[in-house]
Image (cartoon, rainbow, N blue to C red; front, side, top):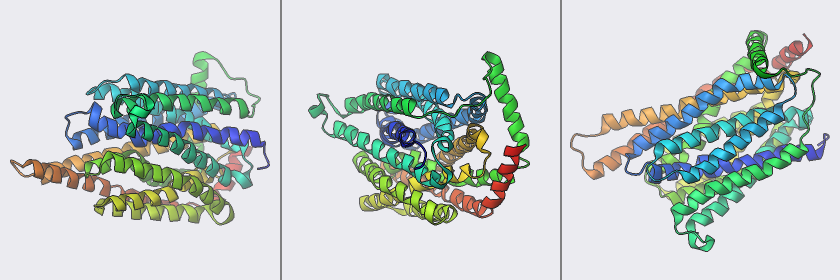
Length: 445
């Protein structure tokens, strides 16, 4: 690491901080608590659809904001300020989940959506700071280091909160439900505390531009955004990569956000699912580092293709699995590739964009990612609801209702495999060398 090691660790530790939300809230306790507590009495497919639509609403909002925020941030070296604002918005909304009462699914979705906006908004500026802390020959490894720190930090806190729910009396709590509510407070505290190290250790590169104030600040952001759209005619490689990324990362993010809900819908216990998530986290820690080295020493493109292929296998197997052991094996396989495909996609993109407009182009990168998470959960929810309607016999018995609900959920997850296939085909046509030439040309004019 040729650049300031303190800055590198300060950057990576933000992943350690915010992954508590991604793991313990988005992937872990929120889907379970939403289905069993906040959606108490609702049909399993209806609660899945509500959760899917909630994720999609958050995705739409972030997708609309992301490129504008990125454009604004480049106009005066304010990436860190935006990161701080969105991070602590997420912290506050996560803590607010503690206040939501049983059956109040609408309030739960509201705070969850706002938490995702904070989480995702901060990530725009976190990602855009990567070129500031990493030399180009180290960028794949440092990107992987961030994800590895996230898996480790998120996994450690998740482990503590799991023990809180399994042994609430040891923590002075009355029951598992109360423990989950206090887990949201713990996640918020963890996220807020460790973000301080990023604030103190990462120094943003200053531009000569003096940022405008007030309305002009926003207006300039929109003007720069329009200018970026015009530049895309010179950045055909970036555009093709973003479309490919849109499809395959949609599958990845849908599996992250909906796996627990899917497992519950086909009959697995919440404890089985929590254990599977813990497996994914601790397998993901070394795997993200290994993928970073693999991209650095072998080929980023080949590594991404391998990860997409493994995800296709995961999705197909997931539609057929029936045993607890299968779910654990799939959790291990997901852990092997999840951090790798995210880290290498982020660092690969950095090679294709003008370096002096990183926040603006990472705004588009995050916008594409959020639009992808609009498609996946909604696709899964709609296919599941349609399948349930088609398959449900008239005057169904309680046993038939449960069986059809599980079968409909399997149909829903099947739809995700198509996204990986389309993403891989499009990524095949991305030419990195051509992308570098295009980016260099725009940096000079």
